[in-house]
Image (cartoon, rainbow, N blue to C red; front, side, top):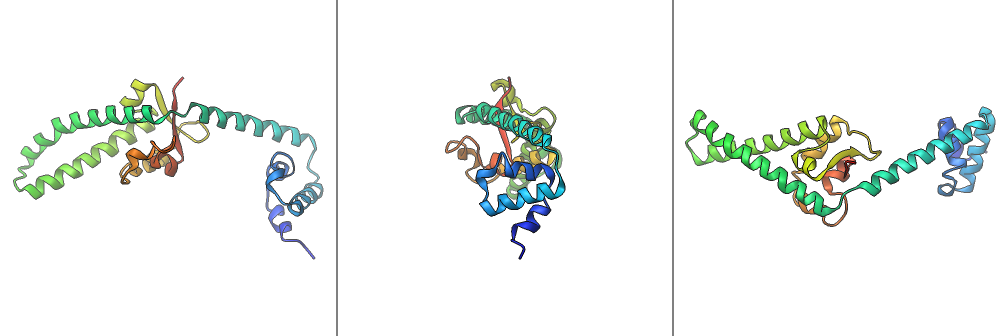
Length: 196
């Protein structure tokens, strides 16, 4: 009778199988390890690949450790927020009232809706544009930090968009006081690190 791991291991790539029986062996049950070994024998995977995979895993591990060690603390994050908020406040303060006049918004409700919508669009545009194009906003330029994905590479546009809209989650701004990564980092799988 075939064990439950046979189908699972047969669907794994050669590299995944090698990781299972070498680097990640502590994460798996004995039966799973035996099944992975049998699959490796069945595929006749070259033993030299084991060294290649182990070296690749070690490089990835060092890269992740570097990102983690360079992740900035909450004081820097708060300073980034204050600088960016001040920039947005000034830009909106100059732009929004002038457009209100041009649009002839007279009722208090119309002005409130316009202001909230405009401020939200300014925030989204500011963060999406600068964090995607340059990996940093004005606040991050001043504090010498940048946004990266979990591997330390430039985050994709989708990650930056997700990161930006997660900023609107209530209490997001204080979430990074309780961990090195706030809600908008965790959900978008990004980090803010020192820009060396």
